[in-house]
Length: 145
Image (cartoon, rainbow, N blue to C red):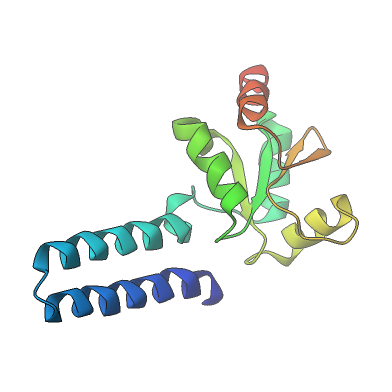
């Protein structure tokens, strides 16, 4: 799906325009700094920041086998990004499902949230938790290990 790359692409384009404007004004240092800022923002809003996503059915199968929680997310979601950053390297232990790429995952999220696609939704032992505290998710990881 291309829509996951729209926000990062727009940020990169804006960064190029702003940097070009600074170069034409004779401020190469400001141009480089602003371009780096926009590149960083584009990277953070891209799906590259998140661990590789799997489908909802595969995540459910893996979770049943190892007891680890499932995180339903979508690119561009600031709350998903907050959860991902606060989990640090432990995020790779979770099963991540991108609801924009997996209709079954989106259906799970809608059924847990009265028809809304509110993310992040974390599924622990079949119970959904909407936008949980990252410390709580770390605790769930510790208890599943």
